[in-house]
Each structure stands twice: as C-alpha cells, then as structure tokens.
Picture 1 (cartoon, rainbow, N blue to C red):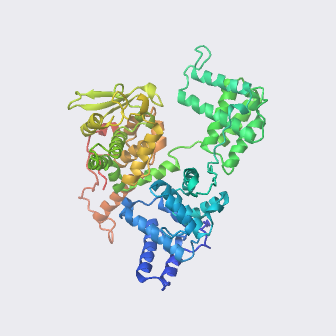
Picture 2 (spheres, rainbow, N blue to C red; picture 1 turned 30 degrees about the horizontal axis):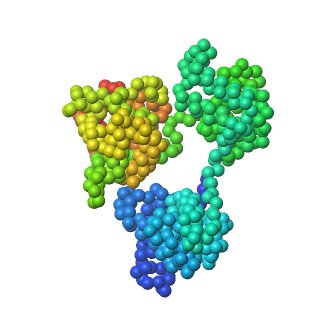
Picture 3 (cartoon, one colour; picture 1 turned 120 degrees about the horizontal axis):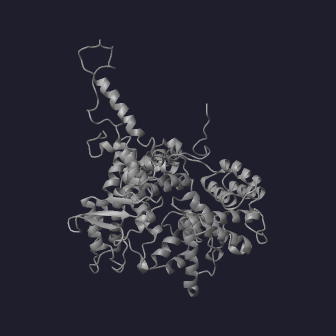
Length: 608
C-alpha cells in the first residue's frame, strides 16, 4: 500500500478547528460569529475539501484561491472578497494571525502624520497601507525602518495575507517608499532608502566579458553556419532566425553554467576546448543541481545543442561521439502526448459549461465593450472598450483559426487577408504562407460570415482608435509595428480568466480546438491535422491520442444504458427471442470509426 504525505502540516489548525474556536467566542457579537463561521464553510466548499483537510494557513488558502472564480463558484466577486476578509478576521481573532493589523485599524500618531502626506495619491496609499499599519501595530517608529523591518513585513504578508503575489507587492512597497522619501523629504518623511529585492533567482546568464574572444568567435561562426550566410559552406536548409536565437541561448547558458561551476572561461582557447566530456558533465551537473537532480526538457535541449555543435558541426573524436551518444538519452526527455500543464488546461473543457463560456466569450466581450463605448466626460470611446473588442477579435480568430501567437500577432491587412466574394457581403480568408509558419506548412482559414462581419467592424471602427490608420497590422502597435507579442498574449490570457474563468494561453487554443473537435467527433484525427497544420498524422496522433477519452467513455456508457433499457441487465435474464432484431444504439451512416474526411459535413454524434 502506498503511503501518501498529508496535504498540509498536521500541526497547523484546520478550518474546522478555526470555526469551532470562533463559535466558542461568546465575547464576539453573534452576527459576527455567524458570518465568520459561514465564510469558513463556504471557503472549504469552494476548495471541494472537508474543513478538516484545509489548514488555517494564509499561504495554503492563497494558492487555492487562485483557482476560484466568481463564475465557477456561482457567486459575485463581492462575495469572494467578503469571504476572504471574514476568514482573515477569524484567523486574527483565533490568534493564528498576529503580525498584520486589520484593514482600517488606526495608526499611531507618528505614522498618521506620514499617512496624511499621502492624501490624493491613491496608488501610494494602496502600496504603503499594509506596511504602515504593520509598523504601527508592531511599535516600530518611522525612523527605525530598515531592510530588516522590510523583510519582516514580507514574512508577515506571506504568512498571514491572501495577496496573490506577496513578493511583487513587497517590491512595489519598497519602490513607493523610496519615491515618497524623495517627494516628502522636507515634510518629515524618514530619509531611509529600502533595498528593492530581486526575487528572481533563476537568472544566471553571464555577459560576453566573461569569455575569451576565441570562444565568442567560435559561437558566432557556428550561428552563421546555421543561418546559411555562406552559400557554399552553410546548411542546405538554413535555420530560421528564431531557431538560431534558441541555439545561441542554449550555448550561452552552457557557458554560464561552467562559469558558475567555477570554470575560468576568459582564457579558453576555443569553444571546442570547453566541450570535453569532463567539462560537459560539470556543466550538466550544475543544471541538474538547480532542478533537484532531475533532467528536464530544458536541460535536454541544452545538451542537444552541445551535441549538434560537437558531433555535426565539428569532426569529433570517437571518444566525443561515444560520450554524447551515451549521455543524451539520460538528459534528453522524450515526451509523447501533451505535457501535464496542457493536460490540466484541457481538462477544463470536460465541463460542457466551460466549453459554452469559451465559445460564447467573443460575443460577450463585444456586448461589454458596447456598454462602455461612451464616457461621461467627453463622449469619446474608452480605451477599456477598445481592449475588450481587440480581445474579442483575437479570441474569435484563434477559435476558428487556431494559429500560433506569432502568426496571429503579425496578421497584416495587406498580406494575409483575402476577401472571398468581395469585401461587402463576402467572407474573409486568412492566408499565411509557409515561410512565415514554424513548421513551413501554409495556413488557410475561411472564416464564417459572422466572424467576418465582426472583423470588418473592428477594422472600420476600432482597430486604429488610438494609433495611425496607416499601420497595416490587424493588432497595431507603435511606430508602424505590430502590437507587442507578450502584451497581446497577456491580454488574451487575462481576458479568458476575468470573463470566462479559464486558464488558457494563446497556444493552448490549438489544443482546445483538438479537444473540442475530438470530443464531438471521436477519431477525426485527419481533420484535426488539417486544422492545426501538422505535416504528419504521426504528430497529431502522438499529441492527441486519447483526447477524446471522455467521449469514448460516454459512448460506452450509452451502449450499457441502451442494453439496460432493453432489459438485458434487468433482473433475471430473459429468454432470447429469435425473431427479435438486435437493438443498435446508433443510426446507420454515423459510424465514428469511418474515414474522418468522408464524414465532414455529415450529421455526427451529438454529446449528451
């Protein structure tokens, strides 16, 4: 029998303990006790866990609350905020939280003077409120604020608050404190500078000044080889710029690992001299040490880049070739199918309501935008409404044409738009040439009439609302360029979570398309391949084999139910009736395992 670790430290009180403590506090008003007890029960219900299995820990609750949304919980956003506030209040009343002062608790006289200096600056008040109340409650004078006090505050908000990103808020607090120290230097603000911490410990890349010129020259020569700069000595099929950039990154990460492992790179005669088996082991061990001794996809890609340089680009010795042949299988993980992250994302679509929210989202965003079109001040279109419409168009395109974010971001009106049947009353076809697609497979999507109409409206009324109309991109940015790709990605992800309660990246729209299609049409892998633009059916099948498992389970359940309805599994077996024809659960012509392309456009199975 496998022993499983408890989901939290059993020494911590549970929500059940917390509720019992509050219910026994007869010094509290009965309404207050009732509200806090109700909030505790509600919180455990949102987590789908018994109260006894939820620790009264702000850290645990904070992580769980990240997956709770007002839409899926069928409550208002205000209710979620009230539950959070009441649970924190209960933790303070029970003595679980002791450092942070309640919101709106009074300041000491010294801190009240500083608070008054912030009048009219809403942002500064928001970022400094908790810190000022923390210091006031702990009896720390303004002049005694130091980096140590700042670190104590961080520990308190991590342990006792439900802030989504406590470290980020701590950084903002430090920056605003320093800004106020400069702004109110003559008004009594303590002239204490707080260090703004840098929490990202994963950054390790070194600069070119740490390596010899010979090593840097070897790497640049290799990259030129990959680019095909020299027609006679380059690759027959040059790498794409994005792929060259990835290889460059892997090689410099390896150099960085050697540097942090104590290897002096400044005197290295060549990059080849740094690819001996012993040095490669040393660099790889440094990476493994950062990953709990386990290989990862990232580590494997770095090892593969080293192998390509040493074995394919150079003339390797037998020892070198043998070493890489033996070590690569240990470092390079070969994964088939979707990653755990993508499987988790796709599991959201097992819920028919989630599918409905996802597919109806573009129209919902348009409705919300139109409700915000006019401001009370001057009647101009709101930027908030503009972003909603832009998100609606981007999401609808990804639903009907699941392309990669780079292709979506760089859609141009003058290069990728073909109006079939004329711009007035016709349909829009998105055509992306093979040279612009990651796997060199051209993409061609004919959009529906409704989607075409929305895009036309967006282009005419919204696309260049705040930018020059001469910009040719569907999603325009500054200086005649496309919108920043990272900004568009974050915009889509935030919109999906805020308005549909779905955690989904733009690239996962491709997986969602396969999931939704295969759930409705199990076995239609060729259709999925064509929609996603895969070169080979092997790619499609290796990624999505089993994606329609739920539909298959439902089909099997239908068969059992049909048999039960005919009495095969009801009570005592009945005598067979030789004259009765066998009962089938599906009409002829809807065999799910026929060639998928032969069924396109024909009636298929509708999920029950």
